[in-house]
Length: 253
Image 1 (spheres, helix red, strand yellow):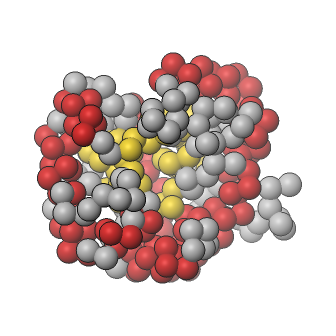
Image 2 (cartoon, rainbow, N blue to C red):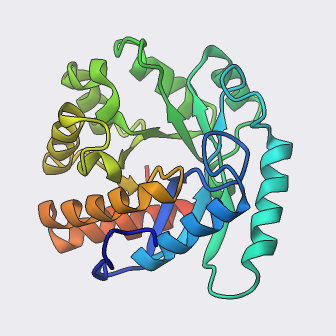
């Protein structure tokens, strides 16, 4: 089974996962269809009802993760899940921020989360935080709403909180926190950053960023930590309401 012991139901359920490496044999997610199905089943157990598969779109590191391959993998997974209790499944991508991203956004060639205006973006570890507001402004000008993946893992951003606060206060992007970070997956410093971001109200979305069934225990623990740190209404907003609004392409900022 996916969990060390049967997990308690994570109320209220009805979760939407906007950052998830679910497609088989596309990037560093599930190696095959069997693992993908196991990951999906485990997330359903935790109360997830909607899923957006977000394969890495970073050609230098993941040359096989192309739109065509991702679409084929999605078709394979959808067929295997059948018409049963599979929930809703969409597709997006996780983009690495590079200069080309601005041009792709201007040309309308970025794949939004479930086809929405919201695009999941991660930043390289070596990037300075200083140009971030300008980069985000240019994406917004192109009609894209950036969703910044796991800011708790960006050391330079956590050390320059003025920049992060400008991003949040200026509503130039949404911040997505990885649930496994709350369970210590990425080390103690990242966990402390994640807890601080939650307590300070700077997070808009929590997501699994799961890559295999082995991550399910950490996702569960992260959900429980988030529930313990947040009010019920804030937990529902971060895990259910805002992700669902993005899934439906509703206007948020």
